[in-house]
Amino acid sequence: MSQRITIDPITRIEGHLRIDCEIDGGVVTKAWSSGTMWRGMEEILKGNDPRDAWMIVQRICGVCTSIHAIASVRAVENAIGAKVPVNAQYIRNLIIAAHNIHDHIVHFYQLSALDWVDITAALEANPQKASDMLKGVSTWSLNSADELTKVQGKIRALVASGQLGIFANGYWGHKAMKLSPEVNLIAVAHYLQALECQRDANRIVAILGGKSPHIQNLAVGGVANPINLDAPSVLNLERLLYVKSFIDRLGEFIEQVYKVDAAIIAAHYPEWLALGQGAKHYLSVPELPTDGEGGSFLLPGGYIENGDLANYRPIDSHQDAWLMDGIAESNKHAWYKDDEPLKPWEGKTEPDYTGWQDDGKYSWVKSPTFYGKVVEVGPLADLLVKLAAMHPGTVAHFKQLNGIYQALTGSAIKTEQLHSTLGRIIGRSVRCCVLKDTLYHQWQALIDNIGKGDVTAYIKAEIPADKEFRGVGFEEAPRGMLSHWVVIKGGKIENYQAVVPSTWNSGPRNFNDEPGPYEQSLVGTPVADPAKPLEVVRTIHSFDPCMSCAVHVVDTQSGDVTRVKVL
Ligand code: NFE
Ligand code: MG
Image 1 (cartoon, rainbow, N blue to C red):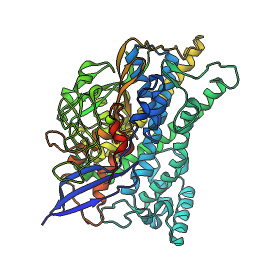
Image 2 (tube, rainbow, N blue to C red; image 1 turned 180 degrees about the vertical axis):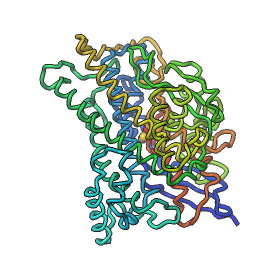
Image 3 (tube, rainbow, N blue to C red; image 1 turned 120 degrees about the horizontal axis):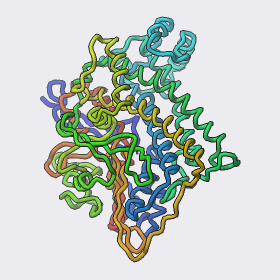
Image 4 (cartoon, helix red, strand yellow; image 1 turned 30 degrees about the vertical axis):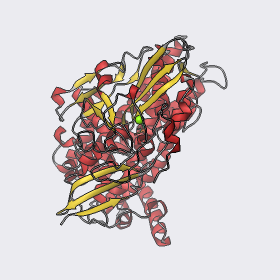
């Protein structure tokens, strides 16, 4: 007899996500992913100066704020052919890298670790034994027995108080939890230390961007940071050295803690290398442009079909016509009209709420496709594409992580095993290492360029009112490929669509009734206790859902949207 479970809401994510599963014989046989929250940004953008759009659209999300802002200025710059000074690219790149690192650290430790770590079991650990386990793989000073003893004391006090606070409502003691008490203790210690380190990443964003979340320093045509190494109150040497101090601290945490922990978690749950496979088609875009035209990038992008890395197709530019032509969104199973796929510049967002229909409409998230295919975006796509491209940093960091895994398990992770729940977790850790390297690189590039006497960070961009423009801004965001599409007429915004990473991954069945990546990834997952579906949550969390991004609904044309009543 099959059984239906509904998890609503999924917690430790951003926004409102409902997951339904049909379970038969202890295994998920069918799944539905539904964005249950309606938002509307549309009327605000309509008729605005395109140069202001970034400030508005970064309110799509409080998590990946600067990401939307940068995608937006890129879209407008692309539309009008604006050049961007290299200093501005470097400053934006530092913000992108720091922001992504922040996001990944928070995901691994604060949002998903508790799916694998049993906090209360850490009480049985021997702190000295735990500390000894890390000798040889990590030089992190806070792995000492003293430090771990202190952390154990904190947990003991929490448990004794009967109020687990931030650790309340976990699946403690669940059969699917497999870490030893010592590894649980290490993970809790790093959970707490990560709260400090993620702040360092955000400080980099705040110093360069004016504040975080929601940076203030962008402009179509560059950035608004006045550069003068010797003057007060501008981007000067003191501030740049301050940024560097945070890069150094972050770098150590990522190398000595995050990379090691990702390998240790994987080594204790190797069965999750065979579970959670999503769409098996992967898309990512090149990121961190190093010239004013956006023609060369530090990190490669590409497309992989059917998981076949040998047939990977590189994407070298954000203006790649093949990339742009392949993207469409459809609404057959989403609560909007226009079931047929539409290209983003022609995209519409007219609501059509029907209530939940298993075989009809059941989500506010649209279904994006690439040449008609359901594709996964995000850290796993990013990892596979970069491995296929033989990106040296990615290859080296993955090898190192895999070395720790192999030392613990006796065998190495094979590339084919990365199409999995653990593949996403490993992908994020490797990506964090790579981005940390780019922080050093871009910081030095900025210093060197300013040292040559170039302090230009902005070139004023004019938008002629007598022409119509179309532009697209791509970005490799923490959850994957993001694109903003703008149509400009009479100097004002005529249409604006964002095709967002979590929309790609959390989308419902598409116009061919093919399930989206979340939905595909759940089929075949064993569920030990349907009343505590920890296994389902593990895989969904591995995508790091952000539903306010996924259901942003940015459309400037349909006035109807503001009159709809939801649920
Ligand atoms: Ni709201 Fe986002 C990222 C974007 S979304 S977090 O990363 O773009 O899916
Ligand atoms: Mg959209």
